Length: 238
Image (spheres, rainbow, N blue to C red):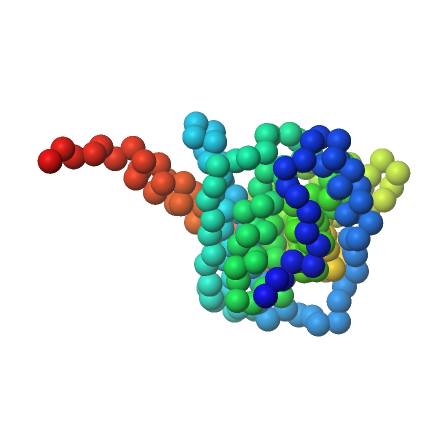
């Protein structure tokens, strides 16, 4: 069964990719849905090995709110699209889309280690994938891509708005641990800024990153290390 509601080619020229982002941005819905809270929450992350031009992607699905790991999906491939700031989804998105297509059931919410609408054309990885699969998504990034903000308070749960130059609200800067660097949260699709920030805070149980993307991050690093170890293992002679 095809779970992807919008399809498009991934191998595009710079101009074609930008035009597609501008087109898909019109499909993004930044609003809460009725079916809340979710029963399952997934975290997705992607690791890159520069030496071999390899991408390693994983999505870990957890029950919510107890965060019991239910399923792990992973995919690796040679990076087919160049590294271009603002177009990273065309490099990483195909692997995540393939993972979602393979799932027996889509998660109720997907949290991506990356941007949602806090993107120069309003379509970071979380927003792009959310629109393609009509899936509620959140972007939770370790660093800012765009927008202006004031540093939130030092206590866990402190937040400050992430604003475009025009004053449009792009997301929230969220302190998930006391006196630890905040994360940059923006809605991807089918969720509001407020709900996205609150959800990331609920998912950040002990560490700076939400537990779902933290575990996905560790998983893709293990994938990369295992792949490198197997590749570099000397071949024994008979």
